[in-house]
Image (cartoon, rainbow, N blue to C red; front, side, top):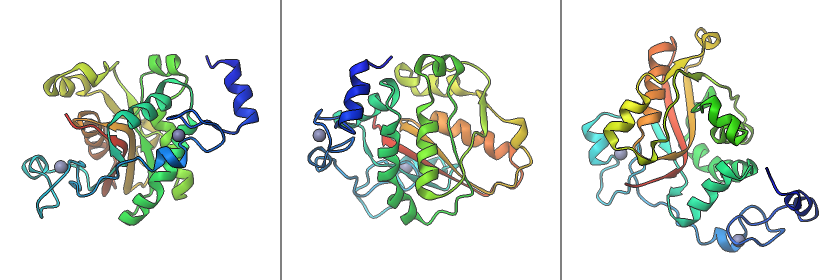
Length: 233
Ligand SMILES: [Zn+2]
Ligand SMILES: [Zn+2]
């Protein structure tokens, strides 16, 4: 539950900087915003930083990526940790709007042809705890800023444990067979889909989502990924 003072303060002062706490300057104030490190050169399929002339990292080169494009806003650091915590646990889905506003130009620059924006589903248990799916909020606000429809395509078959403490192998096992395509979207004519999530670490969850979409949607052509943050292990 939010503290009642939050409601009052949100009403008097439209928003408080989630990083430094000052009121009235937006969800992230200009001063904090200027401290963001913008990623420079990175793998076009997973966001890993690159130094040479290649556009693809060693891993993606080795394991042919199963999606067609990838975009993100920054690498996981203290600032992003605070933003993601706010997005996830402090009942501030408006943080999702801030992220979507930041993402708009980056995604438009990619010139992706997007028919539908969707998101990684969350277990009903966690939706009850949290009150919402943070990735759905991201998809919702991105759909507004990109003027594209959004909707759920996947449902969860089993409860997946939080991936954070698991090894790469355990993460793959944890999400294996976890998703299925919603019955009602099987015959819809989507060709190009953007999937949205908050944090990308090993990509195991997103990979499983993409497999499920590719194996079940008839007319599927391209799948793109947007995540707010890329965590480097
Ligand atoms: Zn600030
Ligand atoms: Zn890569």
